[in-house]
Image (cartoon, rainbow, N blue to C red):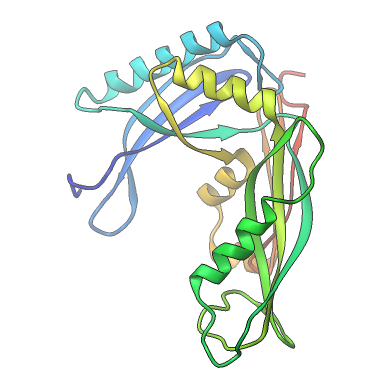
Length: 239
């Protein structure tokens, strides 16, 4: 294992349990688990933090158990899984018109396309969690996975936008921060589950992943390598 590789930590704040898992890439580029801890969750219902103090206690206990599994761990930044019935998704379309079709399309233009989607109108009280590009078009060419290097005048893409309730997200961030951690990013639970168990061949052939938790059931649908749909259903094994 490469000791100079950064430690990656995931924090799962669930209805029935809170889990912290730490890993580091080895010399083969694979993630190796170097620490794990969990605790019972008492402050979360249907994926939403309703009691911040109880959630903080559970996070700290999960971290203590993670440290107990590897005394050399130092955890500050975490990737936090997010779910709950407040999570919604919508489809959008974005296009830009270029001044010249002679120059190759750059990453900067793709980043601009994605940034423009964060201006999409959503209901008051919600905020955009993530914008995921599905497929691109360049002039009359469609279904392009990555348009960088292409030449063309009009570049567009279909997007899958994930939104959540501002207060619910704020409660998660507060619980994490008051546990002396920094949320590096929020990751939608269905996408995290999909990344853990599915390969490119599965996503290309078409697959739906269903993750039944204690308080929510997470769904992600892929086809032709593209994320087509996500949903968080407020029912799980405990109800």
